[in-house]
Amino acid sequence: MELIEMAAILGQRIRSSEAGQRLENAAKAYAENPELRSAFTEYQVQQKVLEEHGALEVKDEALISAIDKRLNEIYDQIINHEIYKEYEAAQEAYNNLISNLISEVVRQANGEEEGGCTHDCSTCGGCH
Image (spheres, rainbow, N blue to C red):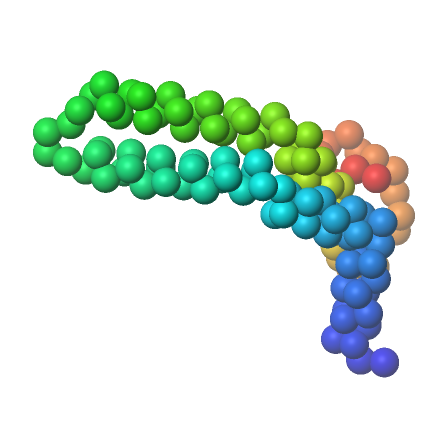
């Protein structure tokens, strides 16, 4: 079996793993939630308006301040939403899995012996 084929199989297995399925489900829930979609759309609109007003020669500081305040409110609403929190946690677990797999492939490819933690994170690709 060619290495690229093996990598494709590994990728498929990662996607169907518990971490991969969790991320897929969380991303779907995040994308399909009307409250989050609405908040994200409003955030984008407010951001665009802020950029446009910031580029004006004469700035309305009160308006810019009000838009900035609203952006912060929307941001807090999004990041404190349970669906978003689950998405972030799922993404972190998935990224850790990928990082650990890459570290193991590199370690094996370099012929390194399995060793313990050096407690120097710069020597490591990630914790178990």
